[in-house]
Image 1 (tube, rainbow, N blue to C red):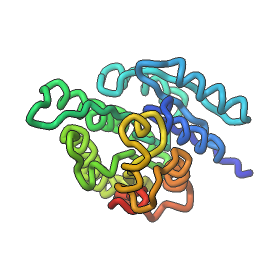
Image 2: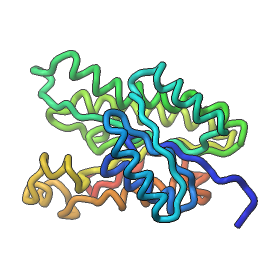
Image 3: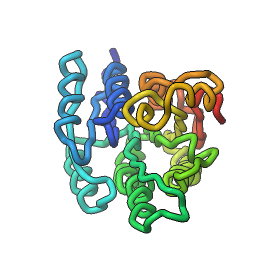
Length: 244
């Protein structure tokens, strides 16, 4: 083992199916993980407890990423203990409707969480990260942000915006040893997919003929957050069984 201090990661939306898998994988790789939740702190605490029970290091936090002041206050408290060098922007919500029938608040809330949340969480962590000359920023998008999807103009707009923001951020931070990339999953097994897609539909939509698993996404995220991925920067990487 080296004498370098343990790296710290924050995973927004870390209490859900995908976020929890990412948290557990990063912790298994030796990272201290800050598990974030918004409305259900008990779920973040359960992921934290599971990580600790398995010999990992974690803590739980709760705040609304769409609220800039609340996010800044929570991050300031984390930064008192030192820099956060790994940021996984996984928080996001669906509120689907055809655009012709979409309410303004549906449009704005989805973009507030996915896009404004990306800014609120990532921006305060950049300068402390840059001073360490090492960092990893991974934002979770969706195949909908690459291909579009009926009923998801708000969600696709928010996710596609992350692609442009990430490519720009990669150019700004690369000289400091910081990478910024996007992972764009397709249909992933879990609560959301079960309700949205019956198995026959998945077979038709996905060339691989199945849904992906949260652990498959977590493995890619963990690689991008690791030592060996330092020359992968500004990329949107699909993990969708061939959909895109």
